[in-house]
Amino acid sequence: MNELTIPVDLNSKIHIYEQIYTYIRNEILEGRLTQGERLPSSRALAEHLQISRSTINLAYEQLLAEGYIEAVACKGYFISRVEKPLRLERVKEERKDDTEAETGYQYHFTPNGIDMKEFPYRTWRRITKEILIDDSKELFSLGMPQGDKELRETIAKYLFAARGVACTPGQIIVGAGNDYLLILLQLLLNKNSVIAFENPTYTKAYRIMESLGFDVRLMGMDENGIRVSELEHSGANVAYVMPSHQFPTGIVTSVGRRNELLKWAAQKEDRYLIEDDYDSEFRYRGKPIPSLQGMDHNGKVIYIGTFSKAIAPAIRVSYMVLPEKLMSEYEKKGCLVSSTVSRIDQKILNEFIRCGAFERHLNRMRKIYKGKHDVLLESLKGFRSKFKILGDHAGSHILPQAKYQVTEQWLSRKAGEKGIKIYCLSDYVIQEENTSMRPATVIIGYAGMEIEDIEKGIAALKAAWEI
Image (cartoon, rainbow, N blue to C red; front, side, top):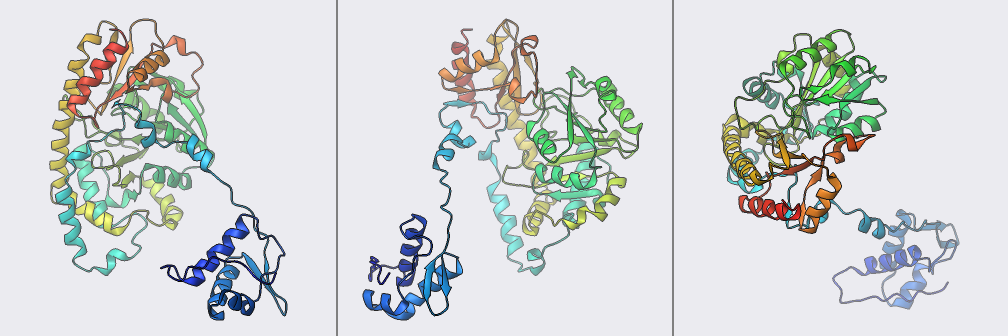
């Protein structure tokens, strides 16, 4: 090949060498320039395009560096073998994210909603500004794998005061989300561990532990929580539980059942309970339910919590409290993994808690969510002849359970026809063999909705279900 007809625009803001590079690269990717084909020399192409040879050389050098072409001594430049990139447009269309999926509904009762209008932007902005104005070089260093000691001390004080969790700062691991902490646990638990999950459960945690190669098994539940009798015969040595407010059922594990769980864990050295305390801050009747970890005297509870639910999803800061025995495992293996939360974010969160802003925010959000919770229950009064309301007085969702013969799919479909998005309990049930044995139960979240929309949405739901 002696020349290339490249449409060079001398008036473009894009440098000429970039135009040449982009044109040749695209020709290669589209298959119009094929493997082994020879490019014109830089001198010949420069004369043809009436531009400097150095400009051509810059474009060729970039193509060479990225592997689109190869240089052969005394012969010139030739097109390399380049695999055509996979086009994913169709896959993207088929796999819409949650935000896109929500746009088709006028009323979206998601159990994962958060009222972001009440986020204390001004306070968060002030703290951020004060921290960054100090020009502290330490904040831009990697920091301790466990998380900054200052933040861990603050979390330890908060957990003891709010949840009765007894721990030292040295037992706390800070990470970017519960997902990271569960992955980190893989390094600390015996690789042959069998992990039991409540059913229904938080499916993401179940899938993560399954994907990490653990043998995961499902346990039935009753009104007091996970059935320990099943746990005894399951072969499991680790149980993942949410005793303060089980997701999605809203069941609070009774004190008696908690003691049974702790007794089960204490019977063998390698047994542990993973306590996911994901939304313990939001309870609207009586005092907060004490943590399982606070009742543990044998070092058998791995406690996991997060600030994402109480503050904002983007605050990707979670924490894990390890028993002393697992801390020794962490010091051998886990500390090799760097912290996944920037020191700047840790410093901001620490000050947010330390100065009392977090407590004030929590108190405000409890009142707001309780107001929405009460409006929702009042709106559902007309449903009580046909539905039993479960999971109220805590968290950010409730569960209407049908008293008559109907399927969850019918309830969901009829709601969708009226522009209402609700969730089926079966979405969180894993490997259920006989769904007809369980009353149809749906999940209605309210935290992220306006009070007016809650009232209108429930009124529309009443018409959809012909109540």
